[in-house]
Length: 275
Image 1 (tube, one colour):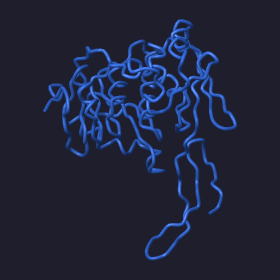
Image 2: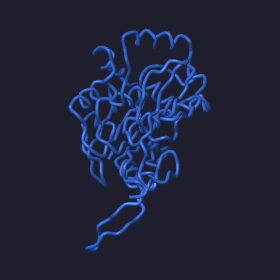
Image 3: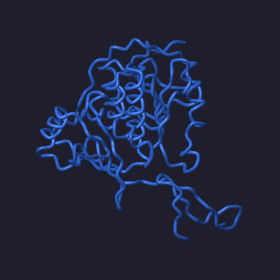
């Protein structure tokens, strides 16, 4: 095999052998890249994630929000992308109050990983249950079907590599407003939530009338992130976990699974789905 040729920070071309029509053929294959991305707050490294190196400002803000490091986008003062030999550092300058709280949380914390729970120092820190939602938004089944039908056309990296997840923000009429992709499903969702939060700084009010689609399963962390952002529905193309369903029921989030074509399964708060 020949050495890979880097196209961008997020994809690479490889010469591979493909078996087709009874013979081996040498073809070019586009692969998604996993890059170590370190989250650094006020000069202190907090976490290293394996992620797709695009939409990194969105990733930095979305991760900080979903992890409770900051409560609002305005508390993130600056984000600097620093390229290193072995990866990327996202240098985030946050409000002093939030930084002091982060330092208190990290006193005995060596580091965190991309699973969302592995680096937590105790159960209370790991299982941060979202508050009960106060979002009356409801959605038609036709809007859900429209978004699902259109999603694949927005997944540019998936079309090239076949290796990335996507999270999409969908307006009430079913039109897709934003899409973020990553090799990690949590990362894709953090990027999406970060992009939505950045729009808050411009418009002063985050649009919470839409819903989120994820191309993955719906785990506890995915429910936690969507509910913590104040959004009222998560649609997953695969299955949820039992804990995800219980938490969604408790906090008022509508959770759909196995959402494909014109089918889906309602796991919690089906009253938000209009015929």
